[in-house]
Length: 130
Image 1 (tube, rainbow, N blue to C red):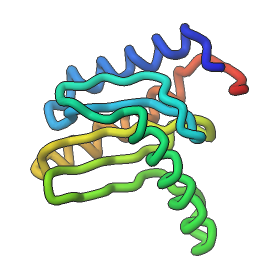
Image 2 (tube, one colour; image 1 turned 180 degrees about the vertical axis):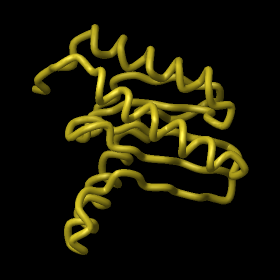
Image 3 (cartoon, rainbow, N blue to C red; image 1 turned 135 degrees about the horizontal axis):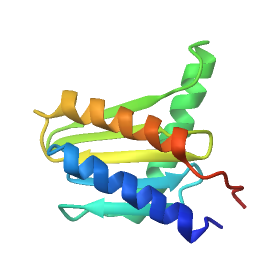
Image 4 (cartoon, helix red, strand yellow; image 1 turned 90 degrees about the horizontal axis):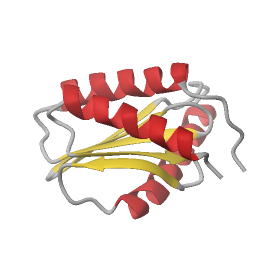
């Protein structure tokens, strides 16, 4: 179980992401097994389902990177007809998922998502996931 204090920490990181990046419409932090920990949205998003699918996608990205001897998969970008979805490893246990309804903000979204994931990992309270 994820302690409430850690969920509050994740939410504060998502708040900061939203303050700095206009391109993000929804963002969430989930465990790598798909449990939603925190979310923030400007637009409706099926965050529970996206968390589960995002964890599967990150596992697939990790497997492909390992097979190709490319190390660990850091980021997966899904460019779609109606926007973008970015999946970033925060650490070995958590993933940051960012959704944008515009393709025009890829650079900004990528930069802020990467910075948010890195800052979240560096300052995250130590916990044990059970």
